[in-house]
Length: 449
Image 1 (cartoon, rainbow, N blue to C red):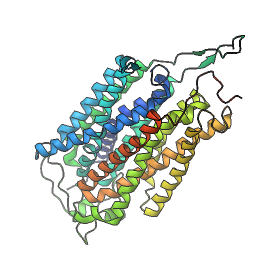
Image 2 (cartoon, one colour):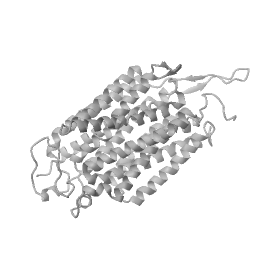
Image 3 (cartoon, one colour):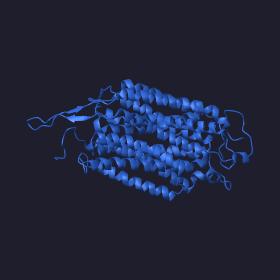
Image 4 (cartoon, helix red, strand yellow):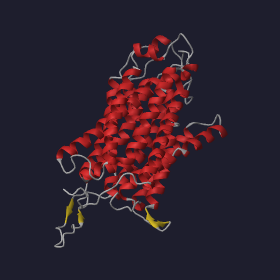
């Protein structure tokens, strides 16, 4: 089969990236908007821990997709993908007018609409890991990196919106004559949270449109290698593909170099048992660990580690920390580590930064260097480096698992979700039940400085 034109190949990579953007853009958008909505919702500083649990409960979406595959064997795999995209678009569209609605639960006010819609979005995003990733087994390995670049955009683009929105300035009224602290006065952002969620809805609609635009291009794209080194099954959306192997080996931009292709498609042994190898088990373990920290443990304490240094520090940590994801994806597209020892070393470095952030949360509301510019810079840089390192490890590990085909990518999606679930459940009790982490008050001075 003749190689596809460069323009068609570039367009396919762009559409795959936009398709990947829709996988987690909704939940990422909710996270980056937390510095704006946290002051208006009754949960306050504990809101991130609630969100971590809701994202963990989103793993029920995995069960729904698994049930679909059991009951509808042989049916088109695009159905669950379209369902995920529909839930994402509808959920964010409803958040825009309803996010601030509060209702009593067990005698206490709670942001029922915000939390319920976030759960809906979590169900969709968690299901995307085992519907979007296996779909990519029909494409060559370089498209997997474009997909993860798109997942990085799912964090970057909401961050761009958040940066344009800005964080509202806070001023404290002068202290009263009796020595009591003045009340905080908040100045509004450049545009409201309602507008932010409407813009997020437009991004998700664009991602859904990109998926439908990608489908007609699939028959003209190279066929990924199968488990035994031969042509893969491909997605049966067009005429059967033919052509010689020599034609498929022609090197084009955005395609896998021959040396990498040789590594990814061994011919000496079938790939079927590859998923059970020690190397694959280590890669899946790295995925579980990194996602437990980035999707469960650390987000639950982000407000406690950042807000003692001010709302600006919290805003910058959320926004710049999220931009570390796409930057790590860009790096992985050019420099992909294939060493387990190297990936383990990067994970260990990320754990050290994460441990520092946990210490700050435990010492809240009086962590070291509170009230200083050095403290603000250190907490923001720690968040950026921690999330960046873990993002690179996740992309590299998933790319190395691509050689195992659809089963390996499905296992990667399950590992991501299991790690996220364990991390969120581990942090819910200390943050929301036992209140190990303590919050301060705006315009207060809990540290006695």
